[in-house]
Image 1 (cartoon, rainbow, N blue to C red):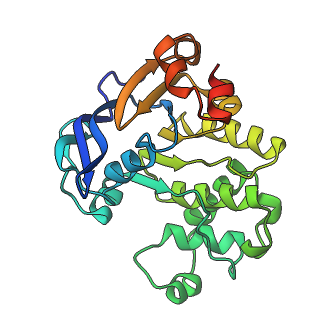
Image 2 (spheres, rainbow, N blue to C red):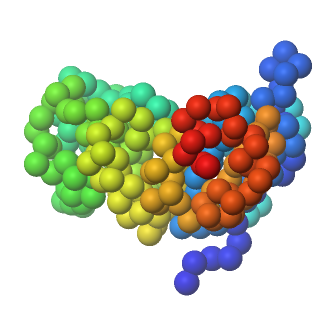
Length: 256
């Protein structure tokens, strides 16, 4: 049975840049094992909200609590990462000159230098952990290939796998399916569902077909605020949400 206490609680979070409030009194609660999609027009504050949660940006006001009572509002990025929050940006960040296997090996041993890590003798437990991760992200057959030779989708899966090697409790993903083929997009959705058997995932996404297919709960942001939260159907049927999306191109057509 999943725990009933939220893994992350954000209350009245505000982020200001030169007087402009990119996030304005935002509330967000995430439950363990949830796959939450964060959507909204361009400039709604979605990516900035991820930046606040991972510590890249500090809030002007408001509180963020992780795992119940740990206040992360003023903690540094590395401290938040050590607590169990992993952040993936839109462009994959991998070591192109190392093999897929070596990338996962390096991600598992962040406290050592690259050279020391790759020269170290892996324990049986470490090898098993890497093997399981390769299977999960679907790259077992590519383990000895240089990461630079992977397709765009495979690079995204590898980076997700590298994050998972550090065993975070919460993953923050920014447009993970951007630029992917339909097949890669579907595989990514299934991977995210698999991940939520053990971890909580928040996805900022503009691909509404992808959101429709995999979302259980959707949070809609507009002008830095929480506009609507619920199932995809509830969000689509909301008149205010429809009005906000009008004139925003692809998003307007997709939500409507």
